[in-house]
Length: 551
Image 1 (cartoon, rainbow, N blue to C red):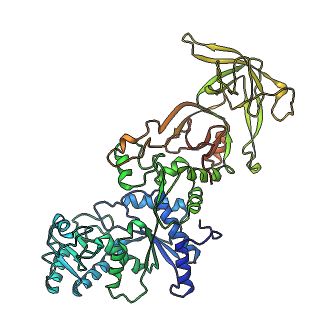
Image 2: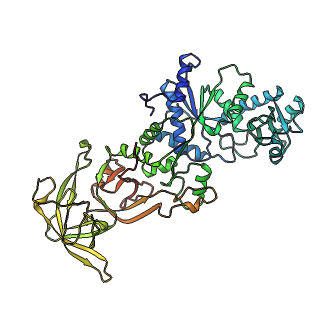
Image 3: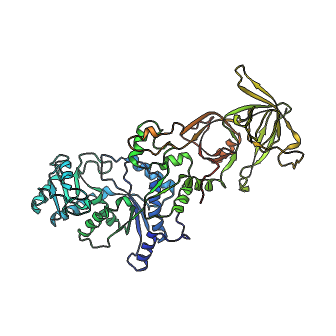
């Protein structure tokens, strides 16, 4: 995943220097998702940075669930994340870790701060605390409960632990500085009351630590050397360091380092936005192929190797970066083109009768022109075939190089055909074409008698396999905001074609375990196992064949 031939990024340089100087004997990094949603491309970006650093220096990478808020977390999200990590191929040791398993230790550290006079019990409501906090230009005011004695704070904290107070009635706050220019350090809440069942610890606890307090302690317990996170946590680093520095810890302390966030044009990765999209019912769920969730990307047909190729191409910026989505699609094409078997599929069928063909002939074609190891396949050439409706025009525009009345085209891997007659129904709709083929023009025969300008794909009408094809376009027509997220959705983000037909060779390929295919002239497709039935496969277009990406 990590390309060791590339120049060192800024995090790599920091770690390399600390290893060389002996400040770090074994590198340990982590990825700490909260199990309240599904992983997405931004998650893979963060995973890749931490995982690559650990593996490059022969260290350890931990997967730790930050599960200290029972109102939002659930075992189903844990299972989903574990599945995504396995799909990515991430080695996080024999078992995942859970922040909730450290609950007793975190509580003891909080009690230590109380005993040191560095934490106090506060009765202010959340609204009152906001009023006391101040602004970016004005200092905050001390809580009227800030000067409680150590003994009183300890008793109240133990009472809170014993469940003697209601939610919101009391909190434990760090005693730092209400005038600090970094608002994060203005006596932040470090423990609050949550009377809810926890999916792992059940009803053992009614108080839970805040993320900014629990996170550095969890890192320390695990021996994490480098706590890598995105720039949105840069202001939280001061509290991360304050917590560790005020607990009189004997071992080496972890170091928080921030990297720039990743944004993709036209792609939303905010959990809040994604949840709004899923809850709206407009999409099919968290694995909708239009979403940047890892489950959505996987169902769309993205490969884990293409994701890492893309992420390694981006590198590790110090500041927030926006990358054109075409770069992501380019990485996928590069990954698929050498290993995907090629098939012909007709998405909008128009019947063609080859009037001078009586017997079925089997033509041979390469499964992948760039990879001979994928072999060849047989394509049945029958009296009735199907072509895509857009490959015929009675009144062709300029530079139209496909089939026209009295015109010729080559059938891919087959023969020249000439259109002799156009058959229409009573409404004038074209229902079939009558054509003849020239048996002297077989593909690969070396025929040079004349040339045609176009080559089109086709499928046997009688032996082709009916299928459903789903075409995807960008999810949004404009840059979405929280207020008009749904109104920005592209009504053509999913187009379903129910009458498509694919070569019968698909049965052989799918039976051998193939899932990704190149449809000639159409793009790369994946078989959607969630929707496919035994007699009617469903395909999602992963990406078109042409790329707009320029290095």
